Length: 181
Image 1 (tube, rainbow, N blue to C red):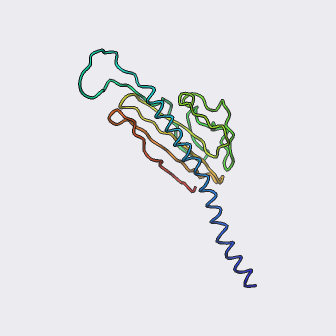
Image 2: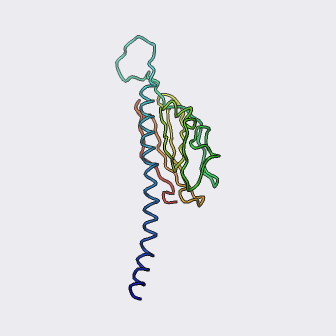
């Protein structure tokens, strides 16, 4: 009898800890994919630089460079029904499946994603959305990962924000909201 009680207590402690561990391991997808997207954004920024046609060479900082992040509409905000997003969100809002994986297709990664040369072909637990605006020193972007891993209509959200400081892209760390839902 004592052995059964001890096993029951251990199970009562171990099972919730195990479930939390499994859920936290799924969040690595969001961190990894946001990092990959940010690398593609930095490459786009480097490729997008256009220089002034003025042949005069002047000393001082180069302020004629007009690099930019990719441009895309505002993603919106998370609500009870998911993400209110621009048309380039993957998966599309209608295809968001809570607590299940989504298998992206080649047609999902259009527009800005094509400009970034970014595609995920394996099943994903999170949706991704990109918004960007401006050129030169006014250029900025935010890329989001969002998901409801346990299907309870509480969404977790991860974001990376980038701006231009002194002519160079500066990208912040991952901001996390409701990590454990």
